[in-house]
Amino acid sequence: MVNFKIEIPDDTVNPKPSAKKIESLDYHFSHTEGKNIWSHCMVTSNFTVGDISTPIDYYPYYRKEKYQNIDRPFKSKMQIAEELINNFKAPSKREKIYVLTDS
Image 1 (cartoon, rainbow, N blue to C red):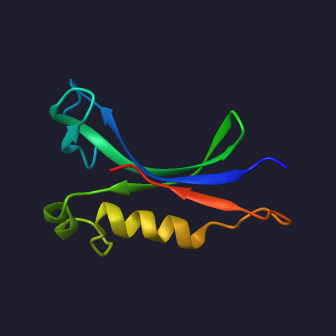
Image 2 (cartoon, rainbow, N blue to C red):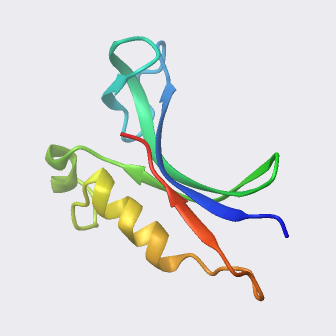
């Protein structure tokens, strides 16, 4: 039997260096660049079976200061990740589901 796992969270930065008027852009830390960059930030989840990984859900992350301008309650990256884990529907007849997280 193949072991199944869901990988959560993964915060992904989508750089937009030349964009000026795209909604919700902000400076987010990029681990690959080692600095804050002008970007969108998404918390994503992936379902992995063997060597195949498929994205299953995502949620935009906004810094707390931005929530004054949008109609949503603030959620930290960890709160978003917890929500993605709790909303995950495991495939039927699976004995093991692993939840993997990064730092």
